[in-house]
Image 1 (cartoon, rainbow, N blue to C red):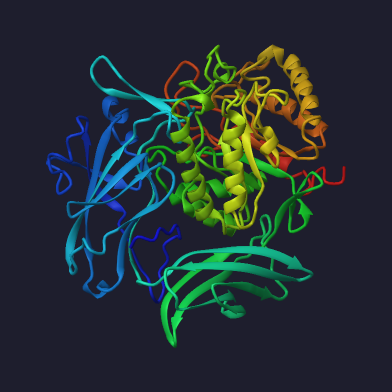
Image 2 (image 1 turned 180 degrees about the vertical axis):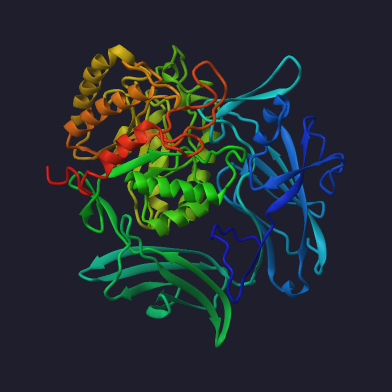
Length: 608
């Protein structure tokens, strides 16, 4: 099975999917000796470990929690005899950050990048009607060619330590579901849809990629009723009286793709898809031709105990809180999330800005303002000897993210980078390659953006001309001119905004980050920084600035919930900018946002 496919696993008349999630066996390998010592067949000593989950927060000793280096997972799985004749694969939703996969002692694939799926072909390796052995050798070390970027150091006691250039914890493990799949030899590898509207009808142009030559047909169902049919690997599906996908009013059709040989179904793949259009026109975001003002969050896949591991209960709670507060959008900061989150966004009618894991592109172990100013460094981030390999890894992650998520109605834009150091000479060539690539491979030609760090201004931010809309991360009143100085922070903020007004050339702007760290236990009258009262004062100032500029068409506050970071003097056991606590309970600011967001019209500023 050499044909790569990022389609989400589905069961059908031709496909079988079995979950391998559960309690696996786990071991650290600090000397990197496991392969040579035969750990691909069995771990000599192990503990149990849940999959999916980060391994870090289960431990009570610091060396284990902060472990950096090679580590192993293993389990056994059964392959039914009736699967003979099909292609067998093991699919991982993600393994952070590097993975080598072994089945029955044979290495079947390797993967770089901790936030996107991959599969391993095992058809010729597995034993049928028997149990088989699956081993994963993973590694969580960081370097400057990775997404996200960082470095790895060795302490005086010989232990390795990850040094992220990004401000979130370097959780590691098998973070998303693991599936065993039985697939037909001839099958659907990929498909794409592009929607257009005409009155009350819709035309959906589609393309199907297979690894064979048999006939292909596509059917669209509204419940049990077939509403469209087309033959061929490409064509157009016409849907009369279409029910459009909309914000908080999602509607999904069932698309079924079949490969047939006469009356025989060779393969069948199905997916729920919302029909909608999204574009930027006259400085507005238009969903189905109507203006929409974005309001919501930067988020993280982060929760107590399980770390970055997929937990559907937490996902459900997050969506309920976002509905309660009046949000309609979030950015997948700072990496593509688990596929199940996009499926729920499709179901719930949320807009998603999908972000590749390009974070930490400046030399800083905490990614604060000093790094964005260069700190006197003579070599910019995009002029390093590591840049060519970084660019190749960046392109690979971008391609996989777009190919994985391109059919989701919820996904309205691609975020190509977060807070890169982008004032040096190599920025433009690096950016242009990626922005061009995103436009080339996305059939729907979604808008492209990147999140611009503080101190990267309209007159020195070399990559901003490639963005279809401008996304600013700004912390006036927190990292700069906080507390009593907030009056000067507002004046400085407005000066910068006046500068951007001359550089937008009709493009809309959104804020992808703004926020103030706040301890839920802290109340103070008059306010001081870190108190809940100051968080609300900070937010009021920022919203007054947003409301003053017609070209601001969205506000995504940082962050949805408190989250874990590397320890340090700038963080009190993590980033506390959450509007909700890490346990998903509201701070005072949550009620502040609910009052604002539920009162703003959907098309706020559209008529100005």
